[in-house]
Image (cartoon, rainbow, N blue to C red):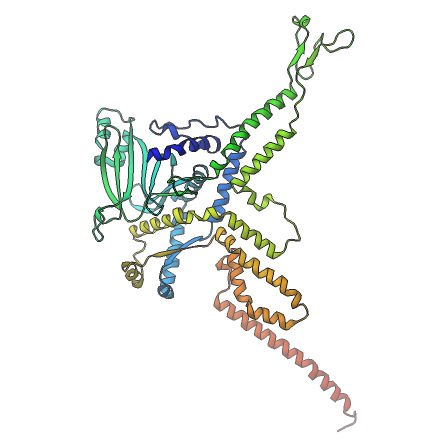
Length: 539
C-alpha cells in the first residue's frame, strides 16, 4: 500500500509546502515533529488564498450552515406514506444536525480542514465518534479530520475504498493512557524503563471481515474488522474488534480507474503555482533594482564616501564640467509583461479552485433576464459537478456512521415498529441532498420555464384566454413550490395549510364585499332616478 502511494507523495509534499503549509509534515511522521517547512518557499500567497476561497465555496454549496442540507428516509415508498414514519425521520434528521452543529462536536472546523485536504492532496479522512465527558459518559458526537499523509488505502472490485491503514505515532505515556493494560509490550517496556516520551509507531487496520457470520454478537458478526498493530519492537497485533459500518471516512476528489489515490485541482495547477513563486521573486528583485540600482563610479573616487540615500549629498559625484561621476549600471526594468503573465497564472489558479464562480467577483449587468440568471446557475452546477462525487465517498458513508453512533447512543430506540421490521427485512435508507449544489443543478428547469414564458408572451400579449391556458398548463402553485426549492427558500417560510385556507377565505370575503359594493352603485342610481320621477305633490 505504501509502494502504491509513493508516486503521489512527491506531489502531496510540494502542494503542502506551497498551498497548505500547516499540513506539510509528510516526511516526519515517525519523529512527531511539528511546524516543519512552514512558509519556506512562499513568495506569492495568491494560491493559498485561492485554496481557502475554494474550500469556503465548497462548504457554502455542499454543506451550508444553518439548514438541513442532507436528510435520510426509509427506502420504501409505502412506508414513507405513513405520517408517523415521516415525522420520525424528520425528528431524527433534525437531531443529527443538532449533534453536528453542537460547537463541542468540532464538526465545522474539522470539516473545513478535511475539505482543504481534499483540494490540496486529492483525499481527506474523517473520523466521527462518540464524544464523552470526563466521567466517560456519552454526551454527543465528535469529528476529527485526520492528516492524509498517514492514510493508506486499497479499493474493492467496484473501485470503492474498503481497506484503510492509518499510520500514527504516540508517546509511550499517551499510548499507556489510551489502552491501559491492553497496551502492547513496547509501550509497557518504555514505561518500565522510565521513558514516557519514547515515540511508539502504530497502524490502525480496517478491512472487510473475511469470516463474517451474520447474527453473531461478537466481532465475527461485524462486516468490517479492525485491529491495532504496534510496529515498534516488532509487529504486535492488539485490541482486535469490528464495526457495523466503515468508521473512518476516506474520500477522493477524483481518481483514475487504475489508481487508488485521488487527484485534485492543486495537482493540476502545481506548475502555475511554482511559476508564480519564481516570478514574484524576479519581480521583487527587478523592483528593488529599479528603485535602488547599483551605481558605477570612477576609480579615482575610491577614497571618497558615497552617500546613497534620500536627502544625502555626495561631494565629488559631479566634476567641474558638470558631468556625473556616479551612474546607475542598470536601467529600470519594464515589468508590464511580467505582471500580465502573473495575472494570467493567477487566473488559471482561480479557475482550478472555482474562485471565478463567485458572483461577487463578476460584474453584473442590469438587463439580464430571469431565464439567463437561472441558466447561469445551471452552468455553475455543471462546472461544480466534481463536488457531487463527495456524496458517494464522503457524505453518505459519514451519515451511515453517524446513524450507527446514534443507535449506539440509544437515540433510535423510539423507532416505529414498521421501520424496525423493514430494517430487519433488509430495507435500508436513502439519502436526499438539498443544498446549493443540488439547486444549481436543478436550475435548468427554472430557466426553461422562464424562457418559455418569455417566448409565449408574444403569442398571448393581447389574448387573456391564452394566459389562462398557460396557467392551467403550469399551475402557479406548483411553479412556486419548485422555484422556492431551487432558490433555497426555507420550508418554514411557507404558509401552512391552515394559513392558506384562512387567506383564501379572507380573499373570498373581500371579493364578496367588493361585488356587493359594485352592485350598490347601480341600485343607488336607480333609486335616485325613481325618486326624481315621482311628482313632488304626490300622496
